[in-house]
Length: 440
Image 1 (cartoon, helix red, strand yellow):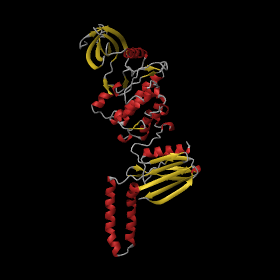
Image 2 (cartoon, rainbow, N blue to C red):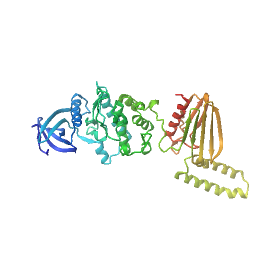
Image 3 (tube, rainbow, N blue to C red):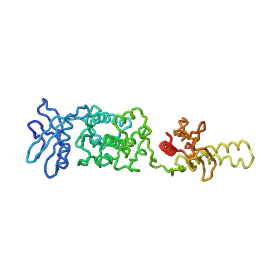
């Protein structure tokens, strides 16, 4: 039985137990070979009924890999030993990093800002660039908040290489399933880990930091973690995290270097733009090789609309009796002026847009309360570009950006007011239309 004060190998004096689970213990200890004694971390594995050969192999692999690593943000390997204290213990000694794990900070109620999470992402990516560029590449395979330490120097340290694997592992050989549910991608559970698997785990970790909710507890759609409606982030950062956590490894960032470049430039390659419908969107999208149908419904009355509606009623209520008693052009102007705020409520709330694209032509219809009040037709073959507009006009802080179908000098726009589209919806529709038209 290990206890506080016990000295292992006449060198490591146990100070405080930091963790314990089946056959494993982690201790803060003092290295008596140094004066004054330096704090170190001692990880111990008891070989017995609770520990299988596979666990011992992973433990030995961790020691072997750590011995070869040399990175300032990976705790340095110091020693590996075994002792027989009625139980056979295997020990791994590393430098101690003063600080707290991100899991501990989350448990304490710590809220992470976008700027802080970007810094964490940058630190981890720089570590992964080092690991993945080794020959053979070293895959951590268990990145999560508990394995990331925020040091007293405000740097992030990657710890616990117990699930580590190098890419030299023989394909087809037996493997031990490692990783943590919610953070590990599907290919990892099939024994096909690649560098992009660590990127997925990083993305899931960032989602946990931003939402305060473990990724396994968040809703999913088509195996994608839905988190954008629970955070207030710049769109490029949302997109970037979605690029990390794409379930299809072929659609994910390939390397940590590529991911870091995209993070710093704040420009996501087109191949990583989400083509899935944003969570909570009510847009109907039906497509076949010959036809693409889009139906954009009104958003309904919002609480913020009631104030404007009240003043419209007051406006008309005050001028209507005067108009009945005497026809006055000024009163008529007041009535016309009242149509603008009324339209600002009715069009977003009850307007809808129907767009139907065929291979040779397309038609766009705007409706209010089911009645078509505007219709545009054009040639599908003339459309050479689909994009978002960059209008700077805003209403209530919301930009009046639109989706634009460009055919030569003619532009066909929708999605500003009647009804308005969320920014993620605009991006998704641009990609859907591009894909159907087969244009870049």
